[in-house]
Image (cartoon, rainbow, N blue to C red; front, side, top):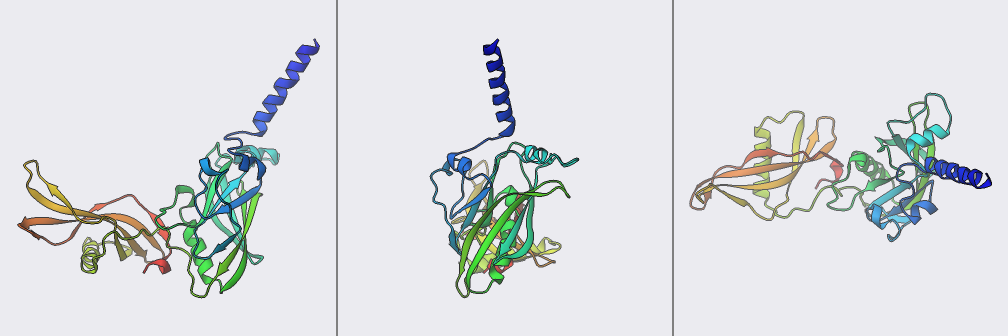
Length: 296
């Protein structure tokens, strides 16, 4: 009888522990030791490097700034722990609140958690070539604007991670760092890749080609050629048909904001070493928010 009671109690303990630590559970020792915190680094804090990466508390404005939020449960189970009626956070809604030098900047980002997540990344300032990720889509551009408006000097920055349905929000984690800003130093531009081919005349032709397509509500302001040279396209008999090249292009909307997308251009082969006008032929799926002031 005692053995049965002991076994039952053990099963109840295991079950309650599983409920209390749902979803992914603790994804690393760092996660387990830093529940309720946001830690920061100068590179992406990927799942498999949480215990080996170097965490930072001081950044320059132009440094890449990456964070990771550590929770002790999924957002749905955390919302149920509050026992508030009609507050189940089934959609995984969360928000980031920003304080700079103790001044409340309000909520600067809103997104949805995956249902099983107990941790996620926060990416204020992307490294060069980093195109961002789904849950941080517009956040780097928001941070860039705020950081670039700060005066030179040292600033205390604190982010708070809130989650919940509208009217049920609660704070679950926070993390701070010191931001050092030199005069003229800028944040942003991390999502704008380095050009592999620089040709001002060709870039101007590409901008003209975009405008010729009757682009509405946006104006091309910068073309970044992301291939070292043209790719030669041949037909089934080996004859040169045309040449193609890919770009990342910054488009400025009528509201003053900017986004980065991928566009492809070609030139028809006219014989010998001659090619026709540059035309736009391919529109990709990339859609990354960028800070207009970072475009040079």
